[in-house]
Image (tube, rainbow, N blue to C red; front, side, top):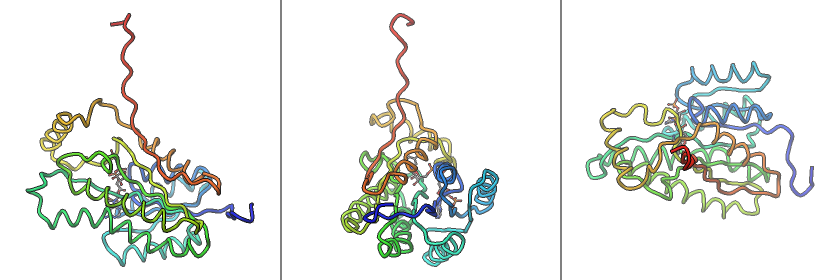
Length: 263
Ligand SMILES: NC(=O)c1ccc[n+]([C@@H]2O[C@H](COP(=O)([O-])OP(=O)(O)OC[C@H]3O[C@@H](n4cnc5c(N)ncnc54)[C@H](OP(=O)(O)O)[C@@H]3O)[C@@H](O)[C@H]2O)c1
């Protein structure tokens, strides 16, 4: 271990939104490379099942309820994670949600709730974990953003505003944390199969998809599997000290055109 960039062998990691999709895949991937993991989300029965499968494979996992929109719940989650695993070396801020809606028709209360989860919820996590990382002069905060942070999509303006805001906070943090030993990284997924959008009304969902096509935002039908993002997050976290992978955008590759002779 270099004296300049010390790092312990054991690096407990927190994953928010670990009850499905990218968060669940990330928890499994981090556990598989040796990180003890603390799993947070509201559906704790799902977290318990995931933790059991991690333990069966020889990993270490603890579960604690987490609702990022409740300040006290975030603090209680952070305390439970520390109690279960020790000082937290890595935080993956992954939880998120999106609802469809026409901007001028969505109530401002709903708009504010969406921003609260995306931006203030992530800030609550920063408050709960980053000060101790700065004190120890090491740690990783990985912020899961979205391609909408740089290419907004219509009919989900609060989600786009939330991810733009989230990346704004992360960019500011990256500068503030420079020289502290704490790395803040952004992982920006493109379209990914998960439970996101599964609670949408079917007709509304079809309308929104059509509108994305209209604006050239769904040029092909391929989606990523959550594993692709889990791999990217693991890469960011596993980067050796002295290397800061500050931003990764991962998109599904388009279907390859059939060769001319087979058409
Ligand atoms: N899927 C995509 O196409 C896509 C594209 C770009 C970016 N992303 C981003 O990737 C991240 C993961 O999403 P996903 O695609 O894996 O979707 P998902 O399967 O719906 O997972 C979302 C996770 O967030 C958790 N969550 C939601 N509200 C929460 C709250 N108030 N407090 C704590 N946890 C909460 C959910 O858990 P509970 O319901 O159990 O609390 C769930 O575990 C999100 O930040 C999303 O914006 C996804």
